[in-house]
Image 1 (spheres, helix red, strand yellow):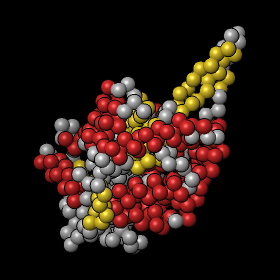
Image 2 (tube, helix red, strand yellow):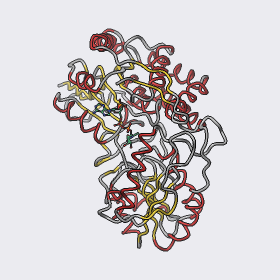
Image 3 (cartoon, helix red, strand yellow):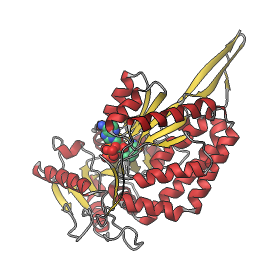
Length: 456
Ligand code: NAP
């Protein structure tokens, strides 16, 4: 299997990269380990900070080029690609500015004598990352860990190799020494060998449940710590006292952003009966208003999915849902375009427990609509999911919104907003959505040794 760019809009095959040999892989791991032991772990915070700051500046200066590569490889609307690049620069800056404070030694009140906890890096870390936000997914893992003094190796998704290389080049250009950040074009077998390697001290995966289970099992066998950021089917609850227009606006942007290919997309729209008809009318009208086209064109509002395979998977899920009793209120088919993996914006209703769709993640512009009697029924439905990533609650009563948020079994809940990601906010889930956190102060604490030093 090779790493290959294939434009999801016009099907053109771009650059292709071979997987590296086992000997090349060994050289990469050795370089990373050498870099960690002889160099990177001994750098001061201000030295690491200067490198990450430079990387952020370069990303901003060349944001058009970085963004164009995202759109070329996975098809995102160019404006959203630019937004991703800006967010990555903000994350680099955030950890550059705050890592020293986040990892400062803590003194403990321990009776007699002195006690403190110091944070030290673990060593070489390995990340396995998905294509849907080609730079953001890497930055969430790399920025905090490089600032913590770890070195980072990444196996990126096989459809975004040019983004993978662009980020590695960026880190080198910003001044990171060889081995501090390494892109690896490796096979799945080699992923296993990397996890087995004694020099690798921690593993992070963002992606599907199946990949997470394989990678975490291998790491567990090797007694290595993992973090998993997996899929989701986030509930988007609209209570009867919600601002209707705002809720509709967020439901549409929350479901349609990145053509629906976001882990925290608003996938299950749950509206209480009193507002359901009015909500659905406006939601359907707004979902019908997208214009498919070239994602490089700023007039386009609907981008293709990342690949024909992704489109066919989604169409199969819709078909199966309908066979098992769901109703298509809008869309449901491939857009009859001459080119591109375009899916019609779709709304499914009448999805009952027992329909596979009830518990599935739909990774594309397909909203599952549920009408419920009241707040309690909304919470019950929200929690009736194998996933536990994010969620939203819309209400004009913030105290009530917080109360509902506390009852939802997910890692993140947004009141009166669809999900947002920001450097200072912890990101992650529970249940089959994984464990551990990225971003915020929490994200830098995952792969450090919190070492107790006790003086008697
Ligand atoms: P995926 O197929 O699991 O791929 C993710 C990464 O894992 C890729 O680099 C892939 O490599 C690799 N991979 C897949 N199977 C593997 C295996 N058996 N052994 C080793 N590596 C393996 O996921 P995807 O379909 O690209 O991404 C979509 C999923 O990711 C969705 O479920 C989405 O919700 C989730 N996601 C979660 C978050 C979060 O933060 N929670 C963020 C974004 C996406 P190849 O490309 O070479 O197959």
